[in-house]
Image 1: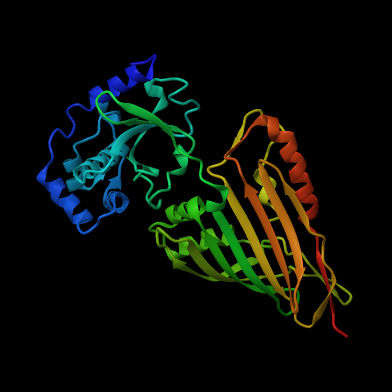
Image 2: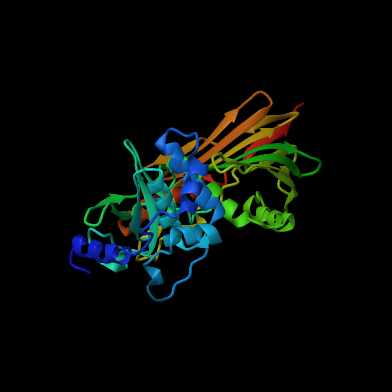
Length: 391
């Protein structure tokens, strides 16, 4: 079963020879109900994928060759649960009934450090998905990802080769693309106002896209309001440990749209005062790079996905005048980039901080370059805006 992809695929295919040898009438009726009135092939497979993703509960269990052989598609469809192979096989069978180019695909997750083309052996795969080979696009379908929109592969298989079984003897290798940085965005936009004493109040509009959104939806699934608020208190904390999340509201959780969360907060003892002047740090991403512990590290530093983290702060200054705005700072290379920008508006200050991670893995050879850039960010992260009362 090893030594070549041809040998490996032959063994994989032998395991499937007795799986779903006939079309069950139940599956035919199910497929018709999902695709009735739909002409476009891609829309048909989209409906099939979403049905399996929503209706089939993921439950990983193995016995004997159960780690390699999927269960009958009709059995999985009727009892509404299965593992990755069962879900992939069900998508494939429904797609085949609809006469679509959908195929079972063996693949490894990112914790396996080699590819089929490098080491053709069963050790390369610990997962199974379905693949739709359209006229223009190849779409990897992993229904184990509960909140993943159609067309977005699960983060754990980005950059991995899929062994796609076309027929008894024909197969192809295709690599799952790493998703573009801009697809995965965390944008925290807040409006900040001075309150009595040295307290500030704020309204936040927290928007998540791509993998960032999916991660939060997984965490929040079936959780109570109390649990969600405690988690968000930590996630959205700004300024200091006197940050208080007063209220929050999740506006939209549609699978094909960004997640929008509105919230209201206060921060006590955040303004520094000296005579008639007030000083405030508008950068609430000061600790962002604290997780980059590269100094004594000997192995690559990995991320779940690349992403963009953006903070926009509109600070209403009321009757105060601006004495000092920090200078803008920016940096860019192939690994990541950041920018800190201050703008003076009529009655407010706009601060924008954008950090983009372009790679899902930083090799050791890039560590010194990354450390140098992080140090320059840390020098600028604590710059203060100075205000004084109008006379």
